[in-house]
Image (cartoon, rainbow, N blue to C red; front, side, top):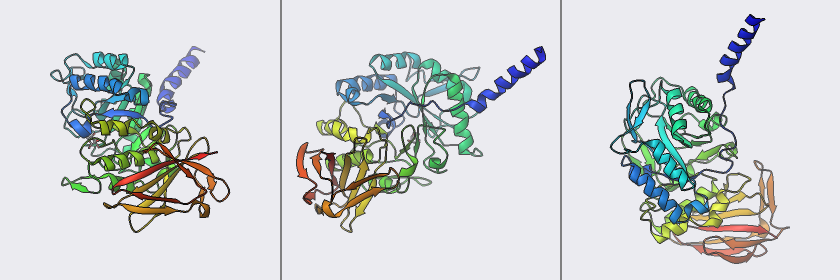
Length: 403
Ligand code: GLA
C-alpha cells in the first residue's frame, strides 16, 4: 500500500512538467504598453523606468489601456554564487522588487527581458541552463511580462527552448505574459500558440517608412517592409495568441503622417501596441496618435481577428478590412506612395467574405454609417461611393458602423 502511494507520488511529481502550460487568459486582447529598446537601446536604468511609469499615467496612456512598462536588454548584472541573476547594481541600485512595487503602485505592470541562449543580444547573461532559477527570480520580483530573445542559441531548437521557459514560468506560479522573440525564423505561428501569448513575426523594426537597414549579418526593417511580411499570418492569431510585428516607432523620427499610418496599420493587424518612444518628452502629435481611443478600440476589439489587405492598386493605395465583435468593420485606406492619391471605392459593388472569421458584409444589401477615426467625424454612409484623397504615407482610418 505504502509502496503504491509512493509510486503514485513519484508519478505525480514527474507528471508536473508534462502538465505544464502557458498561463491562459492573460492576453485576450493584444498587450499594450511600452518597451525601452527602440528609443533607449542599452541605456536603461531605474530612473528611466520610474519616470516612464509616471509619464504613462500623466499622459493618459494608462487610462487608455496601456499597461506594461517593459525593460528590454541590458538591465542585467552578474549571477550570484548560487546562479541567481541580479540587476546591474549601478543602473538599478534599488533592485527589481522595489522597481516592480513602484510600477505596480501606479496601477501598471512591469516586464523584463531575457534570452534563450548563453548571452542576450546585448551580451548580458542569458537564461540557458538557468531557466527555472530565472523564472523563480522574476516571480519573486513581481514581474508580469517576459520577452524572451533568440541570440546566441547555437545548438538549441526553438520549440524546446521556448517550451522549457514556458514550463519554468508556469512552475514559478506567477502569471507572466510570455513574449516569444525569435524573429519568425522558426515559423512560431505554427507552434507557439500553446507556448506564448505573442510571437515576433519578423526581424527588428526601425523608424523609417520603407527601408532596409543592413547591419551585416542581420537587417532591420521599415514600417511597410514589416507590414508586407505579415501576409498569410492572420489565420494564426486570436485571443491569447498574437502575431507580433514588433514594437512601435511612433514618435521616434518619422513624419506625423507616417506615425499615424504605422499606428493605424498595427491596429488593423491586431498587433500588440507597445510604444517605443520617450514618453517623458513626447510631442503633442505623438501623444494624440498613441491616445486615439477609437483606433485603439479597433486593435483591442474582443473578436480578435487580424485584418487583411482586400485590394491594392498600382498607385500604392491599399484597402484593408477587419471585422469587429459587434458587427461593425474597420476599414483602412493606406497610401504607400509619397504623393497624395485619390481613392474611389464603390461599396455597392463590393462584397466582403472572410473565410477565416466567417464574417461577411454585403454592402449592396446593408448600409453602414462611416466614421472617420482620425478626423473624428461622420463621413456619410456606404450607400454612396467613398471618394477621398489620402496624403502621402498616410491613411484614412474608418469604422463602418452597423445601423
Ligand atoms: C533583438 C530583439 C530586439 C531587442 C534587442 C535587444 O534584436 O529583436 O527587439 O530586444 O534584441 O538586444
